[in-house]
Structure formats: C-alpha cells, structure tokens
Image 1 (cartoon, rainbow, N blue to C red):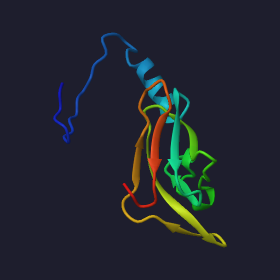
Image 2: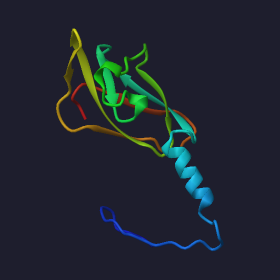
Image 3: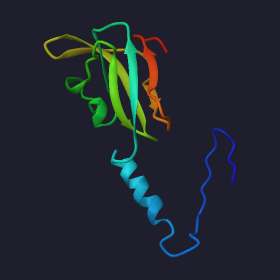
Length: 126
C-alpha cells in the first residue's frame, strides 16, 4: 500500500501464522522504551551558554532544571533509533529562570546509520 506524502491511511493487517506479529510488537516495545538500537547524536553549538531541553527523559523531559549543558564539542547523546524528539535551546538567566528560544519546537529524527548523526545548532536559527 502506498500513501501520498502528507496523507494518512489505516490498514488492517492479518498475520500469515498465529503469533505472527509478536516479534514486531516486541521490537516496537523495546524501541518505545528506548531499549532497542541506539545511535550517537552530536549537536554542535557555537555558544557554550545555551542549554538543550526537550521531549523524553534523554533531553530533560521539558524541565529546564534538567536541561543539558554542552561539553567542549557541543552535546553528545546516545538516542534510540527510530525516535523523534522535540526540543528547544534555552539559556540560564539566574536563580532558576530561563530564556527559551522563540519559534516552534525543533525536531530531531534519529534514523538508522553507522556513524554519528551530526547537526550544528544556533540560537533561534533554523
């Protein structure tokens, strides 16, 4: 079944044998829990004062106090393959207050690959 880009289709699948979807369901469950294959993600930044926060516990769960600080080369993460994360950059102003970058959330899709997934980030530049 082919579905044009931007459209959604619902399909009812029947396994060829009893329990035929058990393996696929188990793998999907592992991925959903972040226990499947992982990929190194490197997000370079030119401003060491920015922090990163987003969806999922790996990115602080949208809690600025759990946001990630960059290392000398930016953010180095190990994220589950097939996952999609929303995130934003922010800056720590003082005493637990933060400035969030403007605009819509950024998106990161962790596709399969052998090497690190690399991106360069800049404050409010997409």
